[in-house]
Image 1: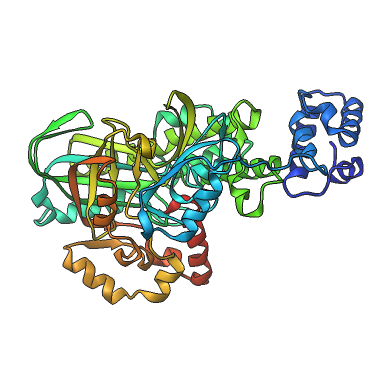
Image 2: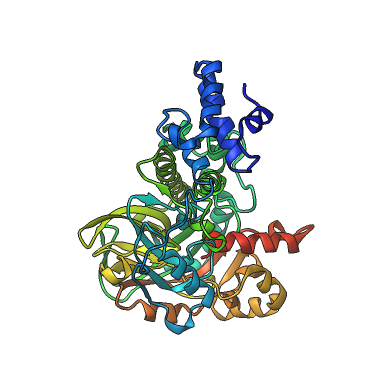
Length: 494
């Protein structure tokens, strides 16, 4: 094995991203049978002249990363003219979100962009930001919670079950069949079964993803803004939801919001560090916009992991809904679901582009999705109009108007209780930082995207379950609230 001390002697700097890359590449090659003497010779040549080994089958990635750190090498050359982008939030959006979109539009791989009406400041790309690039993928433009997702299921039980003797059964099903909180998982013997766990999880092992942990968290929702809730779904006219025709009326529906849990965060963090190591010349304010070339090994590896996280998040929602309905003895009439932290290969303007939607919902022509409000405001089932100005996208919710730390500091539980009572909402469990006051007005957000989607149905929350507040607070709760606020900015905002 080659040590960090030996690497440093060759000329590899003790960089928090570069040194681990060098050790991983070299020692993996040795473990697979590479000649130790030749490997050390190659490392010495690489440090003397990185460009000579930039196409080396084993050390090429390290050579390119080191080459970018040489004086005059790897300079960031922005576009001469910013890539065009459209602001659907008008003058109400935070200046920070607009500044971040302006920075993203200068990336050499950027082609087009858009800001949704719920947009606010994040890391790299703003939350509610849509960015189309050519030949690359940006891990932070997907977000930390890869494939954060919505699913709404219409039940064959009547909506009046929310107000009669069956209400306790609904609440009990949420309590018993879901898990919320930091590190939430199912105990041994109660693990959820799904074909997604039969897939090749080795592709994510390098990123630190442990399959056993992922399995324990399958079908759980974690903390933050994730939720599972029962409510009334109002159809003002007959509609086809998820391919199923429904008559006009009021239905009982289950709505959930969660993502890829700790596994997605591991993938996002690992490949973000790799991207930053390969783009060291990016200005400080743009470091979270570091990209991976799609035709590179890191780019292909990230893409494969991202897609696995997408299937994993989808499986979790499927299991949550299946187990809750089974506990109630209910059947599904229809369901609608969508990611809102993901990247897609799409064609726009005759170009094959990678479209990042960080806190944004796909809204292609005829594509259905769910746009939630807050725990005490309406959510909507929408159908996309395929607007090219928005890159066929719409908002992913109401969007936060205050940070979690600010919410804990300025909001009151008394006011929260009053708001919930006024909207006939029972909070089974939840936290003050998810108060409706922390969110923008969903009516204003929907008005801002009237040209992007058509509303098919309106959802009114009635029984809401989220992570209990003690899971966020407890000892050192202020520090945890600040961390939650940072996570939110990284792509976890509702």
